Structures are given as structure tokens and as C-alpha cells.
Image 1 (tube, rainbow, N blue to C red):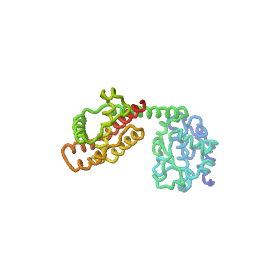
Image 2 (tube, one colour):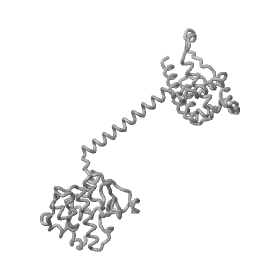
Image 3 (cartoon, rainbow, N blue to C red):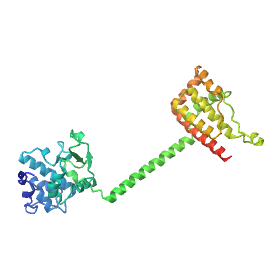
Image 4 (cartoon, rainbow, N blue to C red):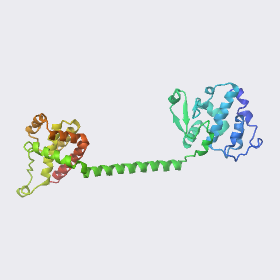
Length: 329
């Protein structure tokens, strides 16, 4: 630190006090009535009543005043305002601790200084915003901390550890509520078919039954007794629906949709519950694809209207039903 800083710097300023200057320490921003070169003395006199942001802004204003008085550039100091005055730059942590923090914040280490910054809602700003090198400087700022609007510091509050914990817990509750709501909406869309899609569902299901009727082999439950075969088993319909879905996926050549259904097929085959599809099922899709019709367009339109997602969810449920049913036998 140059001896030039003594004039208007911390050492000379310490001989003054706010009482001697006739300053009303209870006014809103009393330090504004004091010359910046007297800020160190004012802080020492009113340390108990000044907040951290008030001391910080006084320190920055004092350093700026010293630079102007001595003809030095702010960039030569350990800490200084940005050109816009909406943040401040730390260039030399060691020098900042040894000189200015000692004057305005007592025996405070730089690590303690930064913790207080975060506690008072300051945050780091990327040096690139101010065209500075991130390897050489650290920049802090706050929406209520500005060189040209000093009164904003009165709106700043300290975030104690308890407040921080409550804030974190509140955020966690909010995230949990959003997740529960999302799960509820997903469950609702899974169980309820929108009315607006019922007509399209009916048309495409009819067509699906038509071109798959003679091509999809009927699943045979070899474990069923004669009595059980004589009774309609809803799970057989499930198998038929799953196999028809495979035909539809192959026909439309929807990569993601087809991949999901084939995964279900492999899963069921692994459990021994799904017979291999007849070769004609896959082969038939090629010939059908060459016969454009209004009905085919309906199917494609249905896929484009996000019915693929609904069908995928439906197939997941069907696969689960089949797997659970055969697991019990």
C-alpha cells in the first residue's frame, strides 16, 4: 500500500469520529453526509449500527475516492467497482484482507468476507460479462447493491443459517409437490382416454382388426384346462392386442414405437408366454404399405397426433398384466 493512501486513506481518517463531525447516526444513510475520505473513521465510530452491505459500499466508495485523489486507476486496487457500478471486482485477495478489510471489517479473513457476501444474497458473476479474465478476477454483485443507488442496501437482509435451511426445505417441498402433480397427471392420462380421440381410436382400431385378423396367430395357453378354454379369457384378448400392436408398428415403420413393442415381445418370449409371430405377419406389412388408402392415412394421422405415446403406455400395461398373470400360474 502506497503512503499516498494515508491522505484520505485509513490511517488519517481514523482520527475523526462521526460525533466530532456532527453526523446524525440515526438518519437513513448517514454516511452520505460524510466525505468519502472520512468513511473509515465513521465505520469505526458506528460499527455496531452499520450493516455489512453499508460497510461494503462505504469501503468501495472510499477506495474510489482515494484513486481519484491520487491519480491512480481503480484497476490498480485490490477491489473496485465495475465501470457500470452494478458489481465489484476482487483482484488481489491477500491485499484486500491485509489493507481494506482490516479497516472496514476488523480482523476479518477473506474466506469469512466471502461467506458474509453469500449470506447477504451476493452472488458471483462471470467475468466474461465485463470482458475480464476469469483467471485474474472474481466478481460479486446483488440486485440491491449499486454505486448509483446506495439506498437499495436498506432492502438487503441477512440470510441466516436457519433461513437458508427453511428456504432449502421450502424448495424441496415445492419440487416434491410438482413431482406428485406430474405423476398424478401421468396416471390420469394413462387410465383415461380423451374424448376427443375416441372417434380416431375407433376408426384405427377397426382397420387394425381388419388387416390383422387373418395374419395374427391366436395365442394358445397350453397350461389351461378344457373347462378354462371353454370360458372367455380376457387375457387372450390382451395377447391379440399386443400382437396386433406389433403389426401396426411394423406397418407404420415408426422406429421408436416399433422398438418399444419389440422389447415387450422379447420380454414375454423370455418368460415363455408369447408364441413367435407367424412369418406372414411381418411379411404382410410390406404389401399393405404399398396400398395407400384413406384408412391408412387415418392411422398415420393418429400417430402424428401423439397417439404413439398413448399406445406405448397401453402396451406397457398389457405387458405387465400378461407377465403377472403367467407368473401366478
